[in-house]
Length: 317
Length: 149
Image (cartoon, rainbow over all chains, first blue to last red; front, side, top):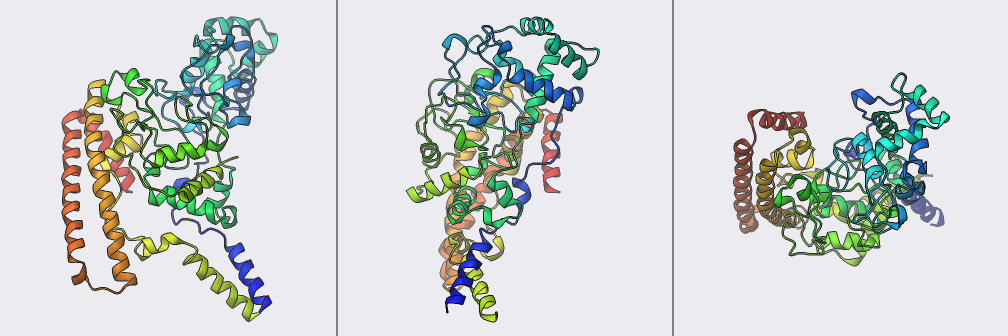
């Protein structure tokens, strides 16, 4: 009897959470995409990494890209909105850069079409690093170490605004997901998720509409939606001057989401549970003008919401 | 040894059935009476990156987004209702052993809702055809064909 009980326990433990029949959709492709004019190599990555962590790219040399895209905080930061030089206050939460290589547009409003374009945005922004890219280039040209590094990474091109952007983008492309417990589970190790995390995944992917937007390995559809977080920010609607997109923001990835609080474009939500609850209930401002039709109240129990939160924590790396 | 193996087999079936509440919410084998939540062209455009490939003008984006607002609301509510009915039908037949005659009302409602969904779907395809250029429309159709493979 005792041996049978032990075997039962071993069996349930060993078997773990059954893996879905279509795991491929949740697995990151091995190939990291890069544009034709900026293929990835080790020299560019090394240079880009150095630049990413160097405050030389801010006007007062106090901030680097990593100040707001901190690896400790899931490549985001813990502030409600980005804080620039001299304490200048931005209006939007710093998004994570993880899996940036696979995105189709950048920033919450999708105004940048490439990582190269994105990398220059915060450098130039008055409320962030406030340094004209041409001035950044000028500073770098006075550093023999950077002159040498750029010559190696971009032979015969030297230090220009374009090679500065290409270097940073090359490093950013290497920040990819693939080492979380969820990834180990989806690739065959059934023991990586416990019962509640597995239930959370099932609720997320089958019982609710979460995966209409948070789909695929990056848990994002690259689209823009209005989920009822209305603070007057026009979002995508302001970029394209499209009234029906007013208040629409890019679907963020959920990779490392448990590390990148606070949440939503305005950083107004402090905890992951609150964020999940808002989405599960159909948005916070249900009378928002362009509230997406996908936002419905799924009437989840508190336990089900907690299960989703537990599942989302399994995406931590 | 045999007892240990038997206990593990029992454990596995327990995990698969009782440990998995979703198993009883689906037809065996994953069969579903209603497909994806969004009509495939709108899904291609909005959820599969089509918008970024097509690069619509602001005017086009406005029209498509307006259409999306209308149809996603309607589509989502009808698809959700079909799903509820389907689950009830499935449980009645697979687990409670009821014949189809006992489920005529639910089946009739499913059929009406699916007809309404089809109309939304076709109107959406019509909207894309009217709104996009020939080249843009071909890009979308191509995406749909690739997805089918």
